[in-house]
Length: 131
Image 1: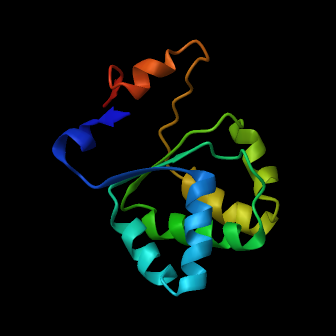
Image 2: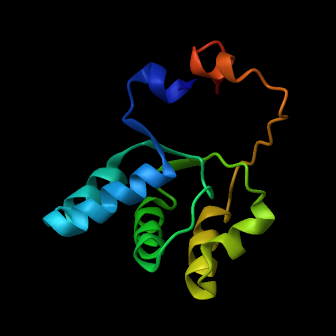
């Protein structure tokens, strides 16, 4: 996936949500969690893919709030998901954390719903450019 940010060389990071949560779990264990959060906060565009495909434990929900809170109003976060937005609160399970996370994510979003007929290969090989 290419964007205007990519063309300018702005820092960006694409990661599947499950992989990000695993990275953060490991960072807790090796003492690099605070440093990893700071790195994620500096990325201009963070693209979290496959949001909602796996259940989150309490630690992952807490970590997600930290990541999102560090980025709100200062950096772009793009979330791709097959899980409809109206199911995100239930997926997050903890009502208080879900409220906090979703309040930050959907405060002033730009929402793009893509029809299932979109050519995914066009996204992967760069023929589809998001601006």
